[in-house]
Image (cartoon, rainbow, N blue to C red; front, side, top):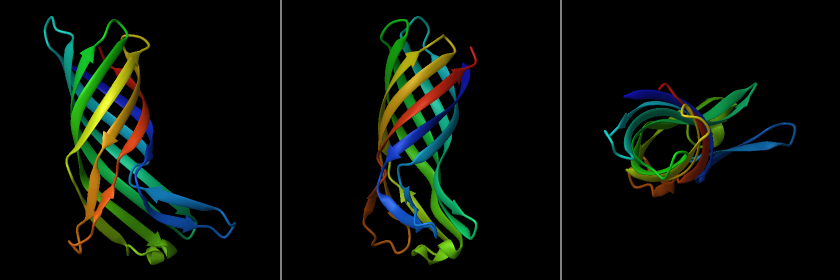
Length: 174
């Protein structure tokens, strides 16, 4: 078993809310952005070009100002099967469940339409990934995740697309 850590930037999903600043600028919080910090364990099958990864991450997008902030955060749990294509390339497929998904607002951002906190239920998501191993310990990864969310209350809300693309750096403790 080899532990690993990583970080990445993600892009996509639907717009949840836009923060407008007094400077005239704006920033949109999405269901697919922005920062993903992760850690996990990788188990390599003996003599096989296959590895199984278990991952827990913190995935967040936010807009911050001096008078308040908006944050969409979730804690994804992933199970991924990786297949070696040679000494440096590998591909993977997996499942993802984003737990604890909610948007929180503070200060004047509470007038954005979600109140101070709104919880989301995530549906089981699927992912595909490609990784280039720069060294045996350092990997660069591109991935696509297909997932969606539903606002928990009221329950009649439509699904919100959380699908996104991401670029990651990973460090394996081998």
